[in-house]
Length: 60
Image (cartoon, rainbow, N blue to C red; front, side, top):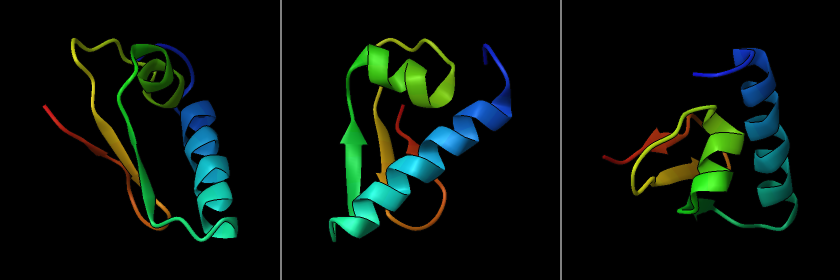
């Protein structure tokens, strides 16, 4: 992971708040730039699920 883990945690929390405010259960992140934004990690063919509540899941 590149960067401060606290920064990535706050980004996910803000995104989860937006999901809840818009009554969306979760979102799948598939683009590399968004994956890096939320995780700080580069991954070939990234896939990240961010639920409105709870911990994000990385699919490999």
